[in-house]
Length: 130
Image (cartoon, rainbow, N blue to C red):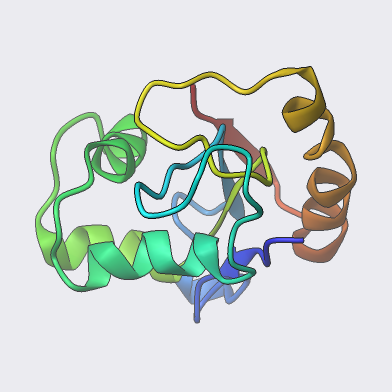
């Protein structure tokens, strides 16, 4: 199972984004150096968010923050947002390349981890990305 990314300030009252504990749930991810359907590294969710902390462009992560603020935010503001949130992708397998859709078994792979993410983070709000 791919481990849930939990921001270093997640759940701390003074760090709650919009006064809520937030779980941002992505659909799937791709790693071009791995084949379609291969298992993801257990730290893949953390790898994705660490790109934000390195100021690497990721349109999906930028848009997720924009959903809450209604506009693009500075790198510092994006990093603050992710320090106070959790993130995970639902599908537990590599999609191989951008815009590839999961098959039925790949969708099913995310059901149990999703419940574990919910139980461990107890978010007040879940943003599901497509």
